[in-house]
Image 1 (spheres, rainbow, N blue to C red):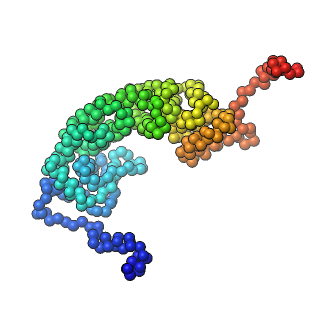
Image 2: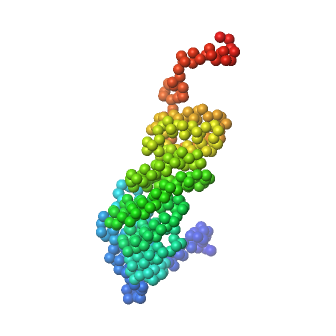
Image 3: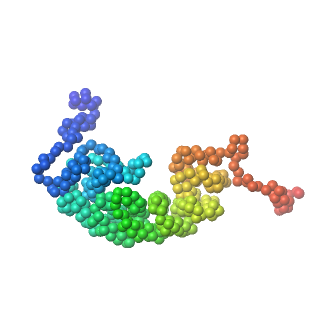
Length: 413
């Protein structure tokens, strides 16, 4: 009680941390070399010494340059261990201009990894043998989902275990052929494209990935239209995010056949009245950016989606899909900005109150600089009049129509 009162100001948790440090610390002991160990453990210890990667408890960042042979072997070892469930290293994204030949890992050894290694020893006597046999076992597991197999494929390619690629690719192709869930297919697309695009940096053969993509991508094109129809808002929002990721992946792949098929699928969605308005607006945005939809057609779709007879939520979702999380299009496209501005100005007060919170949610996701630039574009010039939709008003034609209107309304000439 005295120690808690004096040393930790009454907080017992701090004293527990001190006791933990006293009893356990953060240093790992050393097992004598002649101590009996599983062959896979001995192989790992030998590789750790050769690659100068001593196991330590504290988390540290390891930056690997995959153009160097030593760093490439380190990456392969870490990927092989991940396949066996030994997450000694956790890969993470990095920022900066260092290129795709860099890998960043968070390294931290845990004593329980020794148990995982012993369990993995039933698959082989070395880390490479065990990883190869384990992947073959996983490929034959009918309970493994397509997402799990794709994640394994990325590690397999980067781990340089070529004997495991063929059974895993066959399992992925089988899952792709029998999977009717488009969301699983969409989830699998970005990592596959990433492997196809950047795998060669690590010196791996990614030719089999191209075969998987040629079987998977057309199935997305076929199922995308039906998946967008007659769904609720939550399902539409999830599908919308996956479409955005898929669009970025296909743009990265830069395959003309895939690009054309993707736009044809979006065209069917844009023309489908049963498609959710969020997906419909997004389809129009992608097609408009690609030049497949002209401004006049976009303006007509805009008018239909935001007409007075349309539910406010439907129109708001259509706008959100059209802008797709980026206000840059409103900064640089004067016609589209004026179209949206005129709709806001001309909508009724009741309709405006209903739709304002939904539209504001869309604009709130834009970065502050984009919102500021949009406001500057909408602000009238100094000393000038506010923007008007009647800039081309013909006064002479209106004067000629006045006598007819007076006669209709029985007014004095």
